[in-house]
Length: 99
Image 1: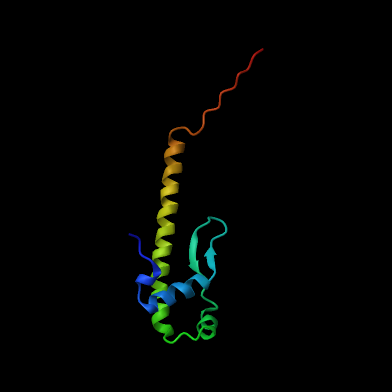
Image 2: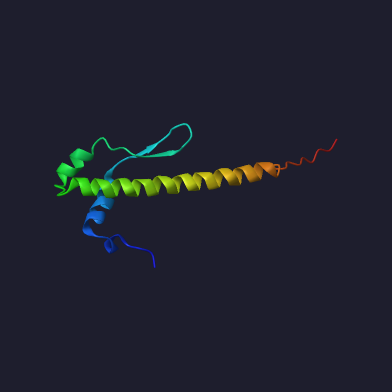
């Protein structure tokens, strides 16, 4: 059975919540996921009156590492699939030309 956020301690649940509020950072040329934009983290901690921001930040950075690794594996899988496809010759076009 998959884990639900309520299965985790309160600090981890808060970390998931705050993490979801941060914007994603993508490389525009390659489409690579670069992680979260952390520039407004102090504002969010203050806005939601986070009690222990160091602990919450620690869990957020751990989770970000997992997310980045997941996106990297998915991109690698897609790249290998494209490489296999191009090695097979890609698409074959046939034209019915009558003259």
